Image (cartoon, rainbow, N blue to C red):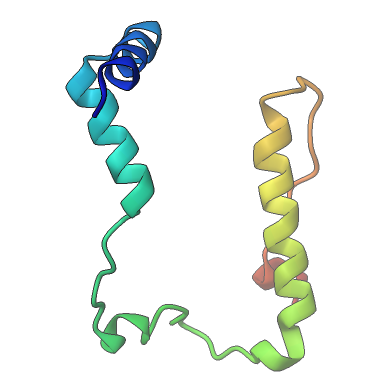
Length: 94
């Protein structure tokens, strides 16, 4: 690395409140990305296991709607003090 580039890198690290080594480590990590992990396929099975049978093909719109509403409530609850409607569970509706 030439002297000018190294000087600028040291200055940038100091501006960020990092050591030069940490600054370089972060740049390398960002450039290379996270290593790919080999995950065994068996980890995918039984993710949606429940006590009662479900029909995802039939109920997918309702399930997605409930999940999106719950996420919306979670995100907006911090921004506002007004009470929010909670999504009713499928057991309550039946």
